[in-house]
Image: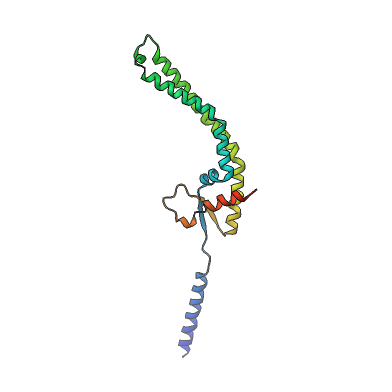
Amino acid sequence: MKILTNLLVALSLAGLLCGCQAFERAPKAAVINTKEVLTKCNDGIRAVEAVQKQFADRKTQLKAQEEAIAQLRKDPAINDAKLGKRLELQTLGQKYAEDIQKLRKDISEAEATAFKPIVDKINKALAAYAKAHGLLSVQDKNGFAYIDPSIDITDAIIKQVDQMQ
């Protein structure tokens, strides 16, 4: 009888300990598509539009350069050394390459300036969301082969950022 009692106590204690582990909260992690949050929140949409508007004329000029280069390439006289069309094409090509590189640099700088306050806002929203939902880590979802959609908080963060002043 004593052995049976000890066995029941031991089993009860083991069950209790196992039961405690079952109720422990597992570390929670989530993922977010930071680029999507940045470009799909209301402030981000406005920033993208402003940057695009700021550089629209230069993009139009580059398009005209592309068309001039394409026309020159089609010119049958391109191979006639006397007419200098080959040199003209080379000069236009170099200017186009310089202009597009400068445009990309300028756009990158403008985006960095425009997005800085939005990134700060996203970080605040993300920290508040993580605290409220007991998240221990949040990672950018780019680079993962598979992610369970239940841990993707991108849409929730976009909504939270849009609600912030």
